[in-house]
Length: 279
Image 1 (cartoon, rainbow, N blue to C red):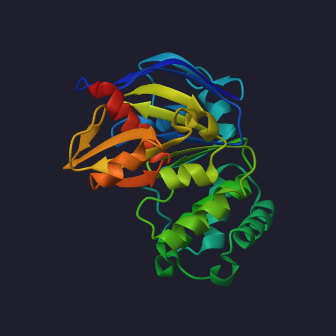
Image 2 (cartoon, rainbow, N blue to C red):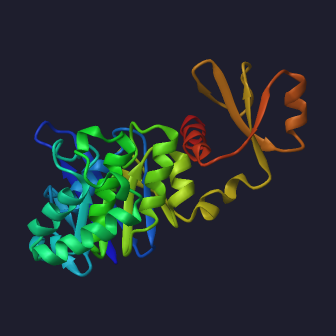
């Protein structure tokens, strides 16, 4: 269980990255969604004890992240967005190094590393230096690291940023292999739909909604997304396009006006938020 209460973070330059974030997590995989600057990375850094909050509290498996940071760290694996493996180290040795740093004996570390590398599909390249591997393979090394550690909680910050579609799906499959709770940040809606049991949406340092995808998409039941070059009532402008949400039957009148009708997706949670803010 992860419990966060009124968590705030203000940087020395005055930037308020978190503005009173509260939630609890008890699902298998939780995606934290938000645009760049929403506060996702700051939140993950605080929860993984890499950064102190300005105020508020959070507990990981019952351990307070400020008062009991070492106990909390024992329960956590955290993989930052910018993480890259050491160029000349092969996948197995990289995982062994990580497990050894966590205090595991070398024989057990080797056994777990071998098993994890097999599970993520990297066994055929286990002896190759990391700089000879693709971007997707490099990210899978870190997922193997989390698999081998077998920690109660794994934090993944933007785990597939910059990867091609095939590599992204390979990493998704590896993430599903993780045990314990997995909390990942992303701005890829497809990623959240593929992986998450629960979604937390953030905007400007605040949580704006939380729940299963089915629950969050409930307001769109029976509706379609309409894109038009002409402004419609209740529409929001994005670039040169106006977007609105209407009943499927009403959408037929938009077709006559040359509008484009599309099914709604998780992306529309953010677009609808824009509609509400403009109203």
